Image (cartoon, rainbow, N blue to C red; front, top):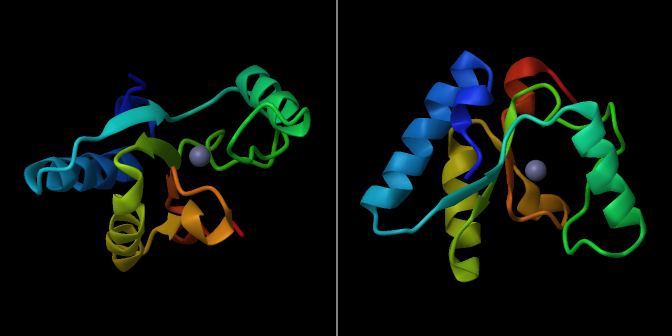
Length: 113
Ligand SMILES: [Zn+2]
């Protein structure tokens, strides 16, 4: 399981509370990706471009994962919209708005478009 500890401190704190809240509500959550280096992002982007990935990946240098302000979660698929709405209520960006429901980030906190 990827560790939320690799995220920027403010993001890590909010992400940990978010996951704890979901767990408390009975939602089983797995953190599948957090901060990525350029090599990892390039690999994921290549997979996506080749049609081998179900989820979109940004080009290297254009991912909020590289900034340490994003994480991906696996949970029961019907629960994504509720989790996304909760995340958005905290000021976060939910990837369900752009075909990437597993993705959660805090780009708006950092002024990242
Ligand atoms: Zn993501």
